[in-house]
Image: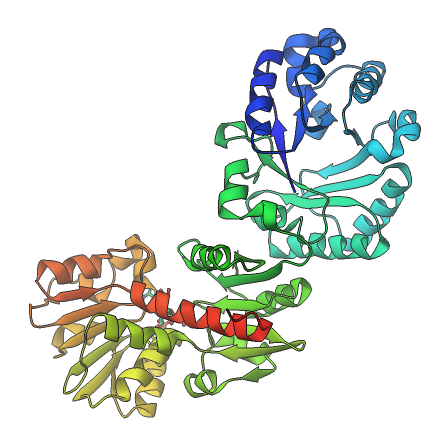
Length: 485
Ligand code: NAP
């Protein structure tokens, strides 16, 4: 369940925002401290007006300045505001663990959310477990929110959630900061009572908070629960990846209780560690992890073994099995764009995971020649040896003769880096008889595609490959889960 956070500088605007939120949502957090600068001591008097205007369930929060809020009154006032909020029908009150007034609410234990915030870091799992146990003695719900600097901080919180769930303690656990966004989305799946969202982009009350609409429309938050299966794409960079939106759409369309996230990392070890903690059912693997991930898997299917690269990992019977659906994707790109490789001279740029797939697919056709160019010439030579192709440096592009150029590098993911690409040189020219393919689909039009179009060459980006490989990944996931429609 998602709780919409309502902050406002006047009672009228708080009521308007509450009305807007309640049209779609059952639970509100009223940040009463946001009213403090204007109301000060009058806050107690105005509570009637606020609670009379609220229809659904609510949490009353009066966060102090040290805890990231605006309340600067004393403890006596804090107690009277929260006690009155309870009398007026607040379903929960949020009291900070560090607050000396915590014991004043001993009689309202089940309605108390005892909260701890660390705005600088995520303490160790041990420390947080001990803290949570102490907090649970005072309150019906324990709320722990820390700042995540990286993926390992978020792993601490995922493990804390698992611990609290096992202990039978009601909790809310997530991280602040850009690195904590996934912890907010996963909170209800990992057992948190609810997660928080801002009413709109202008109403954010904490770093990394998502808007209510994003939570609902993108992440399908109202349908997530403890049975939701978690899937994710891993790589670096990852923001360009369309995998989350593709898979989320497919889950919604087919009524599949699953969520698909993205995690930015260049460490396969870290990716697998996270996958094990979260029991990820399906991982999509992108650059630069396709080869490195293999050493951490239990098993490979025929395509991954043949290509020595993995783009899909499925968890089955507690074992991680690697697959490669990129070859399926590249074949669909050829089919969708009616590209016949027979008797063609191919120039492949790149020798990473995706290039291995392309080399394997093109070599299975009756081509005239294949030359592989790469920045690291040793990798180009190794790949060329496997497919009886030629290998050369990137600078040889201007001298190559080819009918089809295939860019299987990640150069164009960054438009600034692309200006250094071999095809950006003036002496590399295309013509209208050639076909130029890049595996990149985001950006839709790279410099390479624009230059190919300008020369009237047939120019194709990696979208059809993306769709082909993603469809196959979805099939593998559904088969493993026995969810096949
Ligand atoms: P990878 O294994 O990390 O390989 C990256 C390749 O790019 C290597 O050949 C590398 O050369 C080259 N490269 C990177 N930065 C470079 C630079 N600044 N200058 C020159 N060369 C550079 O990645 P991958 O998994 O093969 O993926 C490659 C690209 O294909 C990515 O952009 C990925 O998004 C895209 N892709 C798309 C699809 C799709 O469905 N459309 C599927 C798979 C991959 P070195 O070997 O010298 O480092």
